[in-house]
Length: 563
RNA sequence: GCCCCAGUAGCUCAAUGGAUAGAGCACCGGCCUUCUAAGCCGUAGGUUGGGGGUUCGAGUCCCUCCUGGGGCGCCA
Image 1 (cartoon, rainbow, N blue to C red):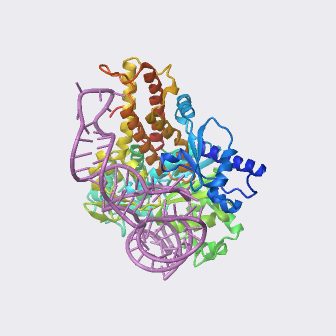
Image 2 (tube, helix red, strand yellow):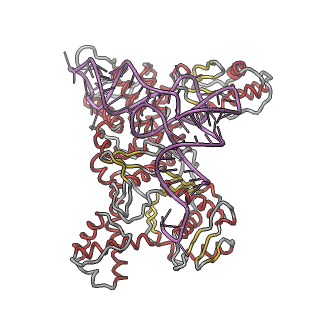
Image 3 (tube, rainbow, N blue to C red):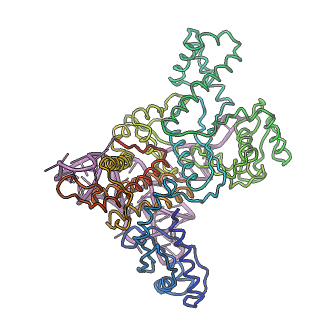
């Protein structure tokens, strides 16, 4: 758990304080100390610009402040060089001996080496996916699940206790409409001329599912009263088809949920009534025009009131959301809840925050992650996605063509805020040059070296890590040590896309090491490596495999031994 | 009209307010007798949409304009 930047910031702080005590520096409030990775290696491994920020406060030149800080800097075996560069940066360089020791450390700790304890065991729920279960997932929802699962992975590595949940919207009008559409296709498959309902689901898959149900259940449903038949076909469509395909897609992408939470359960056991009376007590409800409204405008003038129970007596989606979040926080006691939504739900965010206040909960305990919708390009043309109109590009189709890992990598590699254009044809064409293979290939290469070493009976056992002095070896270790910082950055910003960049960099420095440093001796001619080097490098290679596999697993992908 | 998000290399995208803005793809030129060539090396590519401001320092923060995406339902 090497939180190098964190520790350096503390040490810098100590140094400034000490210099102030000794009157080498005047008294001033120490600004936040940010330790960063400089772009060029000539500035060392880490640097800070705190002296520039302090110049005005101290009424001194940044360079002079830096000299005092360096003079008072605590001794540490971790660093072997402290330097100052104009106009007042302090540059830190990690000691080779410390870097080498990390190889042993990684071998001892395994894949949890880079984990940190930011979360201190707090219970966090990440709810993602949660598409209406009225059809197969399309590419846009692929982004949702990949982002959500990536966030969950990163938070788990950062010391949170994470629960992954899919909210199944199995109540409400969309579901009824879906049931009616499905019933029509089912009846049609049996030669009964039932028309699609107005505004019904037109997608080809509804026909397909209708046919399948007709085959499996014959005309059983046609004989029932319509109400009962719709209820039955809703259940069949949901469990056997819609959720079944969601589960299969998630599996193909390497995603598994802890809980599939059904909306309908919110309306059982009187839970919903409880919440309504709670809101009534807090004077957040009002009856108007035959409906029950949530009076968000009482708390914040900028907000609009929202219908909770429609004039037809049916609760709306917001009613479910209130009950659902009451359940998350109060019934199940999560410390923090993260919901992952498409940007088309952005207007909903302020109401959710108002709801938290109305329930007497700190709004900061609920984080809404919004990702920009995926634009699809196919055959050179932009496609407008609509599940009801049946113009979606199925995620399954893409996974079959390109593979789950490649789809996942592409969808993960962009920040949630970026409006990504997914060119389906290009993704297929370039599937061979997808960076995911570069990363996995590096892992397979490592596995290959270790296989060969075992076959030729070379062992890392007595390897002396202090022999790892080649620039390519040290560069590799530096990058491995950096994983903690990447986890921290991804966890604090809820931005797992950093992992994809890190994995590529790590694969790259490994490949350069592979090019420059022979691990196993050649069988003829110049062996390329002494017995001692082989043993030490085998240790390094094993450690590299651990860190690379960790990065790959955090992205939810497989780390193959052969390709 | 109001609100949210974005605009960075030919394309797809990175870059906790820091030093010379980086990758991948595509293009061009080299490299397999060696632990995996799904690889390596090299060349080229930029007024970070325009303008103003804050700051020692701005792709990043603020204002404004332009362009694109999304939202402003008793749908979810």
